[in-house]
Every structure is written in structure tokens, then in C-alpha cells.
Length: 233
Image (cartoon, rainbow, N blue to C red; front, side, top):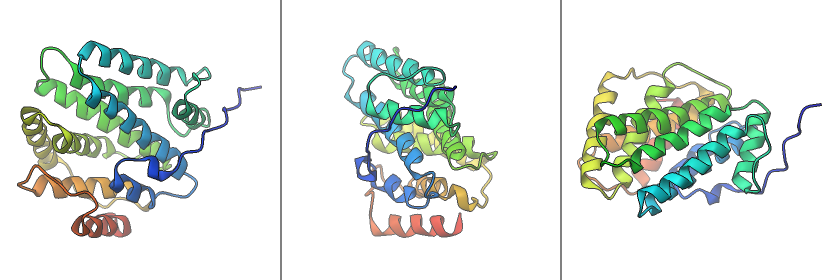
């Protein structure tokens, strides 16, 4: 008899700090919404570790713990950590792979590198954090599709550019995101992937802006997000 998933802790969408990802969740299939919420919460938790890190080595230790714990979800019950318990359930029922989740931690780790973050590390951050996040989300939403990895990298680099306090990192991340966007195919997102369509539409909006600041939840952004949620464009 296989191991049964542990009981998941109660988490609600308002545990997410990002109001626009809370909106994106509303467009997910009802039976996939809780798992997608867990995935988004993982990304925020790992990002918070990087943001709070003063000494790179300590941050790397914490991210390594998470990476190893996430990878271990494939074959063993997790430590007594509510988010890991929820993600264990996600992995055990086959909605997403443990290695995909661990890759998100690897991607965040690129920002703690010494010497300072260079272009190659930013590319890896986009590929490992963003591409893995979008691919995991597509798996959870039951619609694995070619092209989500490229969109995830663009979204991740754009998100980093607007969240980072380091002007050099922001400048490089924006340049890379715009370069990748110019080479990306623009198409129609299927109904099941509308949460990702919303995230990508808002990233495109950010990349068109000449400002380094954004007002998440502003009316213009909400209208754009809702249009993407309704049309997939």
C-alpha cells in the first residue's frame, strides 16, 4: 500500500503577499486552485529568504534546506512544516514533480552568488525559478504546454527587476526580459492556463513602462489582468 499524503494545513489566498497572483488564482480551475496557491506560496517563501539575507552563506544554507526538503517530497514524508506538508500532497497525487519544485529553490539561489550576480546567473534565475514555476503551474492546471518555460523566464526576470533594490540587477534583468520577449511567440493562452496568461500580461505591461515602480492592484493593471483572464491574450 502506498503512503497516504499527510493532512494539509489550512491556508487561504490572502496568505499570498502578491495581490495580482491572488487575482490570477481566481481564474484557476476550482479543483486546482489549492495546489496552485501552495506553489505560489512556495515561490514567495523562497523569495522572502533571499530578500532577508544579509550574509550569502546563511541564505544559501536556508535555501539548500528547502531544496533538499522539496526534492525529498518524491519519496518521503516532509518535516513538520505546513507548506511542505501541502506540497507533499501535491507531489504524491502526481500534480507536480518534486524536482520541479526544487528547481525553483535553485533559481532563487542564483541571487546569492558570490561574486556579484552576473548575466549568466540572472539567465539561470529566470530559467530555474520562472520556467520551473510556470511549468509546475501548467502541470497542476492539467495543461502542460510548450512555451510556458519561456514565458516563465520572462515573467521571473521582470518580477525581479521591479522587486530588487539593486539598480544594476534591475537594469540587467529588464534588459534580459525585453530581449527574451522580443524573441518569444505571442499567442492565445488556453482557458486552463489563464492564471499564467494574467501573470504574463502584467509582465508585458511592466516591460513597456519607463518607470521602475509599479502599483500592484491599480485599476489599469486589474483591467488588463481581467482581460487576459477572459480572453487568454
